[in-house]
Image 1: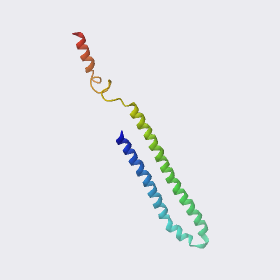
Image 2: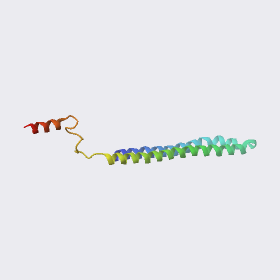
Image 3: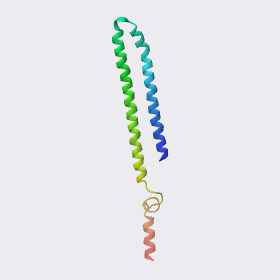
Length: 114
């Protein structure tokens, strides 16, 4: 179970860090065009507003990605906990030897008939 938790943590960290990196790259890629357009006096004010909207939307999308990632991580933690609680210990009746093949019943019947 610890391996599953480790895998979940690894994927969750990758999504979180990847989202932060992509957010930075998207804002950085848009910076130069916005900077150039803001130097044109008739459109500088609207461009500043558009940049604000752009940056806010990019941040909002990545906040949502990280939020869903966090919720998914908590959900998986809960599922792993429930699975772990319902897992039968090794060697208990109903698991492993005899029960699936019927060997245990045949052996009991043979001993009883003697």
